[in-house]
Structures are given as C-alpha cells and as structure tokens.
Amino acid sequence: MSNPALLDVILARSTGKGSRIHGPTHWAGVAAAGLTLLDSTPEADPLVVLLFAMFHDSMRQSDGHDPEHGKRGAELARQMRDASEFDLDDARLETLGRACEFHDKGQTSTDPTIGACWDADRLNLWRVGRRPDPALLATPVARRVASNVASKAYGALAFDWRALFAEYGAKRDPRSVYLRFGDLPEGGRSAIFLGFQECGVSVYPGSEQADGSYALDLHRLVLGIDTRFLASVLRQARPLYLVEGRQVGIGGMGEPVLEDARIVWEVPADLVDVLPDRPRFRALVEAWRAMRKGEHHDPYVWLGAKEPDERRVFPLVANGQIAGFWDTVESQKREMLKGWGLLEDYDKVQAGDRARRERAKPAHNPYALESFNNTSWKESSWN
Ligand SMILES: [Fe+2]
Ligand SMILES: [Fe+2]
Image 1 (tube, rainbow, N blue to C red):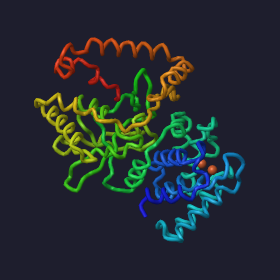
Image 2: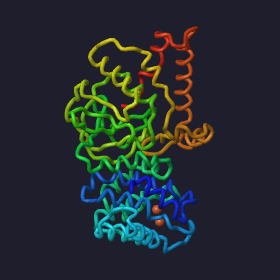
Image 3: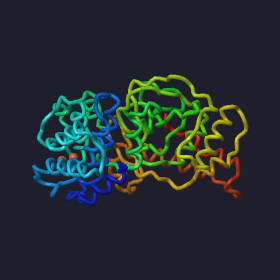
Image 4: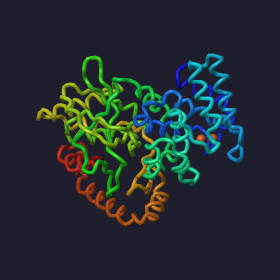
C-alpha cells in the first residue's frame, strides 16, 4: 500500500483525527520535524520515523490525560502490518511499536530511530505553548533546532502530506541532492526580509536524473509550490549550484535549510531541469537558461508564471523567533509583529512596496515591457 493510501486507512480508524492539537496536522508537523533530523542522524530509519508520525497519536481518545494512547497507536500499527496493509519487517515493527508505546512517558532513548521519533514529536511542543526540554532531546541536532526557536514553525504550519511523502522517499535515494541559486549567504544564514533570517542556508530539493541532468524537485517543497516565487528567483539569472550540507530546518517557502553548506560545483545551464514536468515550469527554466547564456529572453514567460499558488502559509522568522506569518489574517499578523516590536519596520516596507507598485503601474497596457521591468520582483530577498 502506498503512503497516501496508508494515511487514509489510519485516518479511517483513528479515534483522534478530529483533534486540533493531536490530529493529522500535528502528525504532519512531526513528520516535517523528523525530516530535519535525518541528515544529522544517518543511523535513524526514515521509514520508521514517518510511520511513527502517522501512528503515535492516531488513537488518542481525548486531548487530556490519556496514558494508554501510545500503546493503542502501536497496537493499530501491529494489526495493520499483520493484515498486510503495509510492509514492514519484524525488527522495524518492534522499533515502531516501542517508539509509539513509550513516546509520552518522559523517556529518552539511545536507539537512534526512537530518539529521532521522540525528538520530532517534542519539537512540536511549541504548539501547546511548551518549550522542548533539551534534557529530553536525544539528538544533538534537535537540541540545536529547539534552541533556534524557528522550531515553533513545526506546530504552526499546514504541511503538505504528498510533499512530505516525497521528501521521505528521497531521503535514502542516492540521486537526491540539494540545489541552490546563487552564492552562499554570508554567515551561513539566508535572509528572508527586514533582517529576518532562516536558521541556515535555503536550498531547493533536487534529484540527479538518469541522463546526468539535475532537476529542481518542486513537488517536494513541503509547504506546496509558490510559482510566483520561483519566477522571481529564476529572473535573477543566478548560477545554479549543487550544494552539500545537513538539513536542520524547513524554510519559509517549505525548502530545506542546511547547516555547514558548501558548494560542490556549478551545474551547467544545459543540465538543469524541473519537476513536476509542467509547461509553465519548463518555460521558466528555459528563460533562465537563455539569460545565463546572455541570450534574449521573453518577458512574457515571467508574466505567464502567475498560475495559482499551492502554498499555504509562510513563517516570518526574526532573530530566531517567529514574528508572524504570511497569508494569515492581516490583523493577526499586525498583532504578532506589534508584539515583537516590528510593526513600524513592517509598515515602512509595505509603504515602500506600495509606492513602487504605484510608480510601476502601467498607463495603458498592463503587459508593457517597461512597466514590468520596473517592478520590485527581481529584487527578491531570498538569498
Ligand atoms: Fe502523544
Ligand atoms: Fe504527538
């Protein structure tokens, strides 16, 4: 059974799926946090971590005191495996069962897989207003991530299950790589805007194809694909690099964020591809390629990139704190920014953007080349 089908069956049997705190949104947050631990914990088993995310709270009966819920989750996993509803050998099932059964017992584990499962769950404690206790985090990377407070995002965002499944599938795939447009940022942290920073270097998930080309795997961005953002990055015509590093977070666009990132080599423009294989994406990459070669490119391609966004919501991280979210209700966002003392800066930037948009407003033809080139699009701050 495929992972999406398995998730459907778990949901059908789950007694806790209706919970806002312990339901499927939380399971996805645990899966997302798990992704950020796996590069630094190569001994941990990605499949067990993913299954743990789906099963561990599936059988909660309430959000309150429910000491047997882990045991019931483990039992559901055993029943379903024994009914051949998914494939898992006995040793891994045993690990999954122990991880589920004891996940809420305040323990730590020296088993790297169980440690990663429990750390991924505990990194989601922010959603109930609790800071993860470093003494209960088994992996050094989880302790670093927790201290960065960007981990607040795991409990706050709506992750895309399809993308999570694809990312887990890619974790042990030797063809899976990280790709990045442009040089590494100074200090090893990508800027978002207003001085907000990620906890490392933002990269795209990618894969090495059988023919030796490299594809940007957009369907693995765990917050969904933002086509307009892709266009704004490609328009800057930066070189594309193959990058190595360890994932320590998920960025505001759902992209992997790496620490100790280093450039391996510049991928020749002719070897750059994009997935999923949609005409829009292909056209954008072709325009980027032409610009890299110093050739003329058609500006209408960039305009054509305005297809509906699939993204949900992006966190704004300021000095290691979540300062707010894009795509939330404006009044809520303003409250959050006010709380962080950033409202004035935000308003200034907004006023500047509005003024630039006003100036760039075309008189007659909305697609006129000169008005398009005046927009602030090409100055995307995603470094
Ligand atoms: Fe739990
Ligand atoms: Fe949980």
